[in-house]
Image 1 (cartoon, one colour):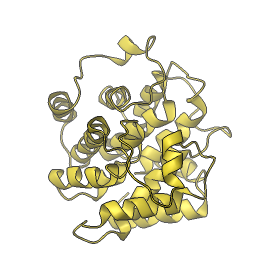
Image 2: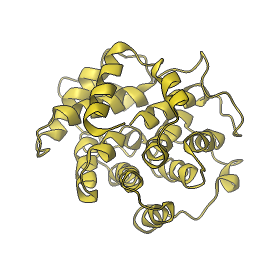
Image 3: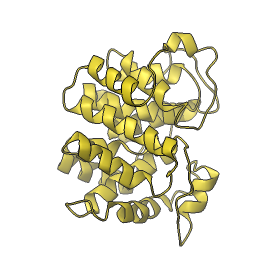
Amino acid sequence: MLGAIIGDIVGSRFEWNNHRDKNFELFTDKCFATDDSIITLGVARAILESRPDWSDLSAQAVRCMQAVGRPYPHCGYGGRFYGWMYSDEPEPYFSFGNGAAMRVSPCGFAARSLDEARTLSRAVTQVTHNHPEGLKGAEATVVALYMARTGRPMEEIRATIDRDYYPMDFTLDGIRDSYRFNETCQDTVPQALMAFFESTGFEDAIRNAISVGGDSDTLAAITGGVAEAYYGIPEDIRSRALTYLDERLMDILLRFEEKYGA
């Protein structure tokens, strides 16, 4: 899960000022944890506080995303999600925004099987992003992450995504000059996963994600979760990233890692 948070933090200063190559300083004083990190931690808390059979996970996702997210009204929520966050009667709003995929990495780390990974993804996604493309983007992210975490070869992960979710028939070099800011799952998740598929390590995956531009923090968050599951996170990058989390957010992260592993 921390990999997604790292991608978000690194990408935070590039969301509105894209950087279309891989040469940049990972962390600066302009970086911060955006809504991507905060709501990812809301999902993590929901998983921690759900029943063992996950029967209340959707209800916990609503409760915990609001409880974790409401103290951060200026962290970058999209308009409809902002309304959902502060509603006393929140309902799904048929979204296919990429927020479905940026927050879902805890599901891939908590799942005990690929089928369970899909179940957890749907449970935490359908409370807001209940459009088929929103559900698909979240599930593709979790499937890739779970397969990476359980030791499947990158070629097999890519083939699964290509067959079941999105055609992986492009390269980052081929889209770098033309790709533009996009907040949909269908035009963020494939690019984020390709940043992982073309990578040689965790840091390289994050740099790949930033280099194509677009919605940089969300794209790198999606990439970062899968890259963590496949490569792990270098200790120096982990240590630096943790300095961007306040005590409240850090507590959720550490409790989740204690239960499900770092």
